[in-house]
Image 1: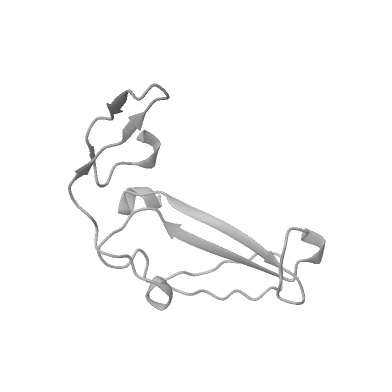
Image 2: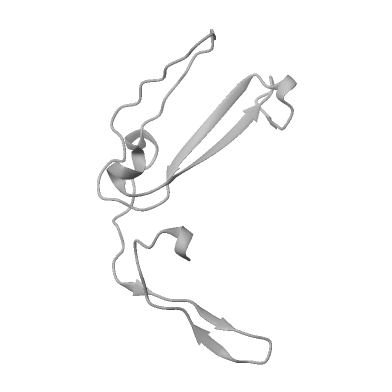
Length: 107
């Protein structure tokens, strides 16, 4: 699993495009689908160095852009942070200290 390798989840966003290369939500108008795969945490170095698309039952062409061609991750941040919460009566409370690599699930 990818999370075991880099200790982070990924986010996948799919956008369909029609014959005019305009984004669409209608599958029957789709001539191209673009998947943007994003690592949800900053890491040192590349998240992947090779991707081999495997197709089944399609004549579609597949193009892959590696992180080195699109955008490499910035350097990981360090330190701790916390949330400050204000209620409607002006009471202030703070979350526990969280580390920079805290998983979004715990936020």
